[in-house]
Structure formats: structure tokens, C-alpha cells
Image 1 (cartoon, rainbow, N blue to C red):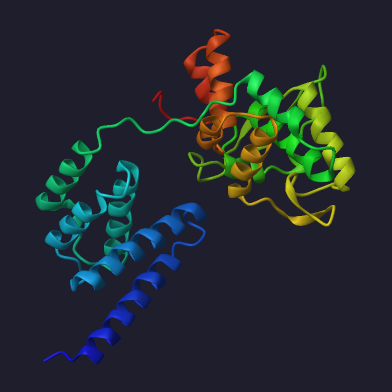
Image 2 (image 1 turned 30 degrees about the vertical axis):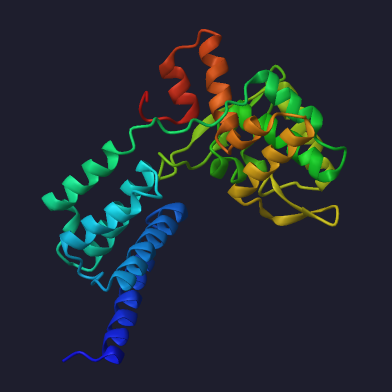
Length: 294
């Protein structure tokens, strides 16, 4: 007979086992991917505890019930991510993978059919909106940084994690006013082959103005500002969203527009402008590091 105390001890051991297993992936996967695996497995484990079900190894019926429960509050993308986390942990622990069972497949199909709405697209920060936000940034050290960040994010079509990881030494010498910057690693470039991003002469001036004001010669371009001084660490990717929304409020954008702004807005807006200008899809995919045309 399993006593309650023994059951709790077993649960703690299982939690330690899967957390240790995920820790072995450090360096082989992006930090964001590892955070997602941990968060999704934790959500599954918490639900199992409340439902009095076993999380490891999980029964396909348990996973199917979990998906049915999560359908009420999670997007289709989150549901898929939940399954990815559960699958990865089971594989790492050499346990039978419940995710491929037909019962889970049916539960997932049912969940996805219930969420037929198209995913919400981030508001594109097109050329006019970009200029409004840049003009709304205050004449302070943080404002100088924000102007440079918005301009460079638009030019390079960087994801927010790529943007905050840019280094001063990766700026190429200017040619005819514009230049290029090396984007060392991205979501679709796990081995760091990198790609070159375009930097206009206007954006380059804003970047140089920030670097001079902040006293930055090497290292991360965009850093946190405290007490009117730039720190040594890069901005957190989530800060990009906050900065964009802050600039949008100062520019007087509507509440709906502000709500739909995200760290992808500069990337989306630049792509929209390139399409309007007549550039083909393939060059845009290459410039933004997209793998598919979707």
C-alpha cells in the first residue's frame, strides 16, 4: 500500500528527475526553448497533481484529458507546445512516449478544430508608424536608446531576442552611408551561421548617437538604463515590447493599436513595406530569416 507521504516523496523525485533531464539540454537548445519545456511540463505536472493522476510516465488518457482541460484557456500554439514539452521529457527519461497514442491525437484534433480562429497577427510597425514612435521618444539617455532600437529593429527585421543580442563589433564599416550588421544567431539558425542585416544611414546615425551617449565601445548595443547610466547587461527581450508600447502611448496611438504591438511588430511592418515596394517573397524571407512562406 502507498501511503500519502510515500506518494509525495515519489512526486518530488519525479519532478527532480525531469528537471535534471532538461538541465542536460543546456547549450544544445535555445534558452527560450528550455524555458518553454520547463513551463509546459510544470503545467502538466501541476494539473496531474490536482486531478490525482500520474505525470511520469503518463498514460495517454491522462495526456488527452490534460489537453481537453487546457483547450479552455490555451491557444492552439500553446497546446502544441504543451505536447512538445511532455514528449521531450518522456524521451529524455527513456519512457514510452504517450503523445503519439491515437487517443492523444484525437484529443488534439478536437482541440484544434475548436480553435479555428486565425492566430492574432502583431500590428505591423510600418514606415509611418515607426517614424511616429521614434519621434515620441524623450530626449533622455533611455529615449536615445529607444530611438536607435526601433530604427535598427525595423531595418534588420530582427526578432526581439536577436535585436537585444546585437554587438557593437558586428557593425560593418559604412559604405555609401548605409552599413550591415551581423545577426549571429536566430530562432531558425541554432548553429550560429548568422546572417547580415541592412542598416540605413538614418538608423546608423541613431545607433552611433546612442553608443556615444552611453559610452559603449564594445559588447551589447542595447542595454538597460538606470540612474541615467547604461549597464553592462543586454536588455531583456521582453523589454522590447514594453519600450514599443511606451513609445506608442507617447505618440497617441489608439488603445487597440497599442494592445496589438509586440516585439515582432518592427519585423512584420518592415516585411509589409518591402512587399508593397515590390520586393519578392524569397528575398524578404532571406532578409528576415524566415524558413517558410507562411
